[in-house]
Structures are given as C-alpha cells and as structure tokens.
Amino acid sequence: MQEQTRAIRLLTNLLGIYSPSGKEEIIAAFLAKEMKKLGYQVGLDAIGNVIGVVGEGEPTIFLCGHMDTVAGYLPLRVEEGKIYARGAVDAKGPLAAMVMAAAQVAKDPAFKGKGKILVASVVEEEATSRGVRHMITQGVEADYAIFGEPSGVENITIGYKGQIQLKVICKTETGHASTPWLYENALDKAYELWQHIKNSYQPMEQANSPFYAITACLTKLMGGNATSVIPFEAEMYIDIRVPPPYTTDQVYEQTQKAIEQYQQANPSVTLKATVEDTVEPFEVNKSSPLVHALSASLRKVLGKPATLLRKTGTGDMNILGHAMNMPIVTYGPGDGHLDHTLDEHIVINDYLNAIEIYKETLLKLSELYNRNAKLNAGKKHA
Image: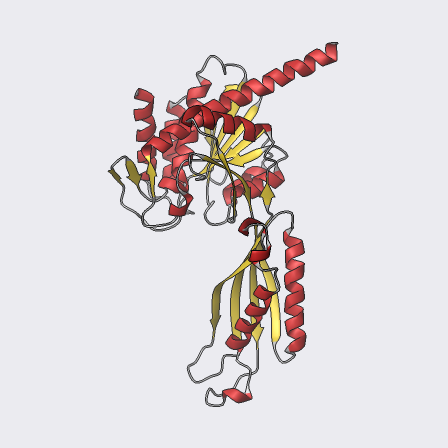
C-alpha cells in the first residue's frame, strides 16, 4: 500500500507541472530529484533528457518515455478513481509507471546482479522527437526496449505506420478577381492536385486493414493575399502515413509520379514539392521474446490475454526500432483516444496494474536472458 501511495503521488506531482514541448526544464529537474530518492543514478544530458540507471549485470533493458505534452493546460483533478490532467495519458502515466516499476524491481533479490535498467525521460516527443534522436546519436545499447505510450493496460502495441510530411507550392499567373475565367486560380489548382494525389493510392477498402493502407490527409492550405486578386500562389501541407512493408522512399516516389502527371496535364501551373520530414514504418515480430514476456506478465496480473495492436499513428518507437537493433514494443496505461483531448484522464487502477505488469516483464526478461546465457555457456563447454 505504501508503494502504491508513493506511485500515485509521483504521477500526481508530474501532472501538476505544465510541460509543453520545449519547456521541460522544471519537470526534468523535479523528476531527476525524485528518481534519485528512488535509488537511481541520475543525470541530465546535453539537451535536457533525464537518464536514470538502476541495477547491474546483464541484460540491459531500456525503458523510454517522454515528459513533454502538447500545449494546452488542463486543471489537475482527481475524481472517481481517475486523474484528469494534460499528460495523464500521453504520456506521464506510462512514464511514472516505468520509473516506479524499475525502482521496485531493482530491490528484488531475484533481480539483484541479473540486469541493468536504463530509464530515459525524453524531451520534445510531441514536436520534433529531438530527445529520442539525440539519445540515438549517443549510442544507446540495450538488449530489450519498451517505449512508454498509452496502449491501454490490456494491450501491447507492436506496430506503427511511418509518416511523410509533404509541402507543395503551387504558382499560377494572376489577374483581377472579376475575370476568373481568364486565369488559373492557384488555390483551385492546389486543391485539384491534392485530390489527384489522394486518388493515386490504393483505396483503403482494398487493404487488409487501415494499418496496411497508404493514407493521406490535407492538413493545411493557404493562398491569396488580396480580396480582389486571383490567388497566384498556394501552399499546402499533406500528411502521408506509410504502412509496412513500404518505405517512405517508395511512397514518396509514387507521390512524385502523381505530381508529375498533374504537372504534365497542367503546364501553366508551376509546382514544387518538398519533404519536410519522414519517419519509417515499424512492426515488431509478434513472436519476439519481448512480446511473449510482456504478454505473459499482462496475463498474470490481469488474468486475461493481451491484445496486440498495430496503430495507424506514428511514434518514437519507429525511430528507436530502426536505429537500435533490438526487440522493442510500446506499452503503457491509458486510453490513446484521450490523447490531446479536454477529457484526458487515466484510471488510477490501470496505472497501478501497469506498474505490476512492467515489474513482471522486467523479471521475466532478466530470467530469460540469464537462462539462455547459461545454456549457451554449457554448449560451449560440451
């Protein structure tokens, strides 16, 4: 009961600190202080990520969460077994659960000397993924990794789609708005191009599921600078989601062909497409020992089988999964549909159950790794 009270207090305190992307200094300092109290060796890296280590030996298990949120303050309140606040789900709930679980497992005699846990609380996940990208450049090495995002306490996320952020500038000749039949309207042509791009992909209905479909969303369209002038320049942004087994290069090449087709059919329109950012799709093998260990832990704590999710969004697991050659999944308490909403909240019991599930998983991974190490050592001596 004392550990549960301490866990709830940690989460509540984290949620009481407003920490939108780019403004994580206060929460980072608080978290570092609390992790030291829990027995971690703690430091802040060059860009403000909080890095804590507990335990020693092998394997090395990497737990990564983020302490930033989207902008938009929500008053903290506790009602009917739920905590309401910005970040309750995305993703201070999972982060606090990982911090508490690792600290408790490190004190377990069954874990002593049989594993090191690296817990990272990174910055700017909601904006640029700068925190995770920086950690990768520092050469993080581990045998297993779990990224703390809201999968729901009963679920494990094993896949995310990739993403292309595309910017297109469309230019035309201009004239007076009273004679629109004489000139091409850049806004009209940009929207026409958008429709052509969207229709160049296979219809979602023909894919096995939305996860395996290429989808595109027009997120911004701007143009025109006077009410009596035909718009001569338009700028649009398109968010393209890329499923495995495609790469972002393959999907961009297909998109570029659609743009070129439109350009050929509309020679009076000048087009320029620029890729602003890309993230590759990622899907872990569901037969991975990590998936099995987390699934078994979930079943032990909750008494029910885990559900494996493939999400149509894009997460830092994509970046970590491609950069680090290791098994990785995403898991954490909280309903992902509440991300960024005015109703964002986490069920306290789910949060506490997630701590137990993380603990069981850490113990199982340590046991599995060390058992395999003994077997391999025995084979060498045979």
